[in-house]
Length: 571
Image (cartoon, rainbow, N blue to C red):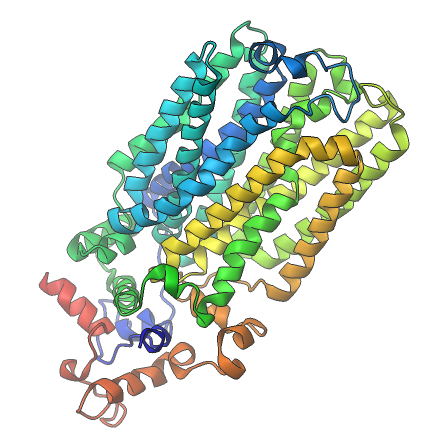
């Protein structure tokens, strides 16, 4: 039965050692820890793959600033250009403008679903090429649009396709390329790429705002991150996991040797082969991910990007120029004032994200999420209090409240930058089995972009109707995120990616969700015992334990570490 296959894990029985005397089968199952080194090749490959985050980030920093430029508004959305002197909370409440903002997120959410199939069956780098090409074409269409608003929207739809494919493949690529102890740092490079794109786009908008057709320049320059990702998809190798999964076993081992900088990769390669064999013995990944034992990973794949978006920080970053257009300390500086304020807020978030890249594998995921949620909810409520007590009508906040507002929104942005920003992507990308990883990442990207689309679509309307209450609303979601983290988010720091799924299932609460009665099957709990059980189930010969631990290759079930290495050597 499919369910029975799913609960079984393929275990090694033969004894094989590498050149350093490390037992390959035991190391591959996690009984012996083997440290994989960081190499320049890994850093370069993961940095280029992180440009998938640049696509999303550049849109976030570029579009909000472009929408605040009077020349863009008068050309495409004249209703907002005529409402700049109205109520501070409502001056940008325009449905066509909100639709333009949200259509990229909606399209990206839809595109993330076929991205799963492409990434799994054609490789991670194929999705990179699709993402880069779509983003370049979208930039060209938007920058060259004259009087056809449909051309503008089609360009933004292409951006959505690029973001959907880019976000999907970037996190999987970096997770599979990174050594286990460095996976957190390298995977957060994608979020670092996102906030870098926001900061760069914010800075570009300051310069282009001084030019009559400057908004076209801002949109055209989006082709640069698209080109980086396209070239990465052309020249970077696919991950060893993807190559093995698609039958290119020897090529997978060659790539693993290159990225690890050593020919001695038998341990890690055996682990990949075992994971791939187990994946082949299971059902369709979309059906499999809905099984009970995969419920913890599915909930994390949905809840974390949902809470990430409903913290509201991405909406604040996106619409920062519009928000700060009503903060008198910046609105008096003309158009550039709000853009400088947006750059400041996004800049401090970038610094916070860099700090996370450095420390996430030292201090762990949970502590950063918890501290970020606490700081974020306090900042949210404080911003609401400042706005509620200081605003008395008109297009701007009083001068006295302006500095407090910018400081608190900056803290709000910092809290997101070192917690839910990068880690909201990191954990969902590392908790799945190889078989369900691509489907799980599609669900994460779909949830993130769909939630982002809804927040983007309604944020300006909420700001107009709830006024300062919009920050209370987001603060309440930060509180939910804090409780969720404390109860349901396991610490995955340092856990090899082939073993994180079972690690998550063993969580004190998730084990009762994943297994009947909370009893973990021996296959998911004790690799050494499971090896003996599997040998007894699949062979008429005595198990290795009955032989005093001296197993033979003939007794090993297909897919063991010894068999994996032997077949790879024969190839």
